[in-house]
Amino acid sequence: MTTATHVTGLTCVVCAKTYSPDEVDYVCPDHGDEGILDVGYNYEAVASNLTKKALEADRDQTMWRYRAVLPIAPDAPVPPLTVGGTPLYDAPRLAGAVGVGGLWVKDEGRQPTASLKDRASAMAVVKAQERGASIVTTASTGNAAAALSGLAASVGQANVIFVPASAPEAKIAQLLAYGSTVALVDGSYTDAFELCMAAAAEYGWYNRNTGYNPYMTEGKKTVALEIYEQLGWEAPDAIFVSVGDGSIIGGVHKGAKDALALGLVDHTPRIFGIQAAGSDFLVQAYEGGEDVLTKPPIAANTVADSISADLPRDRVKAMAAVRDTGGAYLRVSDDEILAAIPTLARGSGVFAEPAGAAAYAGVVKAVDRNLIDSHDKVVVIATGSGLKDVASAMKAVGATGTTPMRVAPTLDSLREALANN
Ligand SMILES: *Cc1c(COP(=O)(O)O)cnc(C)c1O
Ligand SMILES: [Zn+2]
Image (tube, rainbow, N blue to C red; front, side):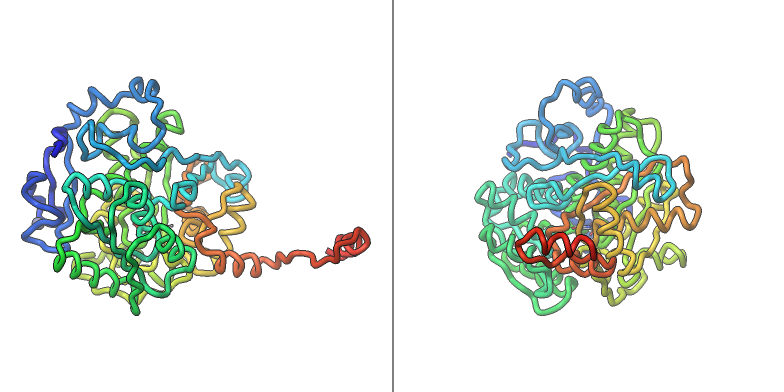
């Protein structure tokens, strides 16, 4: 087994005790499932390898170009699918429409399985193979599942996936096409998560679960490093990202901290976490100053299935991302989320699933609340493709009153339809 010598240890987010990577597998033994670990690095050693100059010369455009600050050995084999290197689009019409100084859309729908989760699942596959795991498993609302399924298929790694039976059909189709062993759980994501955790313990499977496996944040943080690099190492004023379990936002924060520690940027953006009104655990905790470790779960219900979470698993890191950077947690209604799908698509060409579009709805809300001003440069992370949930997209365009023309295959019929359109 190869080792990542630049990793200094794994620190519990609850008690701050630090363990060596060989000492623990997933969480702090003293704090169980709440004791999520944060991976520490010897930044001095990393900084000598990860320079702007070295990156400029590197032809690898995938997430592995940041391998010097990832918890893997320099020569660790990585899956062949192209993960990372997604486009960051300047969207001046959207910037003008919402009234900000600049707005960029990071299109994570362009990942191999069409969501940002590929960044974490690629990491999971590397770690599972490093350990020689026979089976890797996860529970998911759908995208983490599809991501693990696809990345595992790319290397022939056996896997077992738990998703709520209510997951959108496209996401379930991905799992079946990739050949995973799929358990459709009659219950919520929470039920699927608990069952997966129990099964992993029972059978000794490698556990990719979000907010449990400390390495998932490390994969996800590459989105922040990429955004910075694409902006010429000029950090934006604010980053907007939707939040379910809180692992992506924790990753965005981690990437920001890494970049600052490595001297790649001179400031950290304010990070805004956007939740659906029906799944607003973190907004409630933020507004009420509640302790996320003692706050009881809510009963989540939203059209944005990817951010539906009764109890955000990575809530400690998720809250720190917003508090430490001077951002905010904001809630947006399902109607606002659905409306954002065509607005984002028409204003930038990026077609996002509800959870992806929610981040754009959050920008509108933040400008409304004067949390963002007309000079601010903001980045919206469109976390997943609109093709993941066509039913919601159809509902969204229906609400805008957009309907196709119905025509006979003749110019006369078309002429009449155009006149009445
Ligand atoms: C998973 C996911 C999110 C939320 O990420 P968390 O880490 O659960 O907060 C947002 N959008 C999409 C498309 C996702 O798949
Ligand atoms: Zn602890």
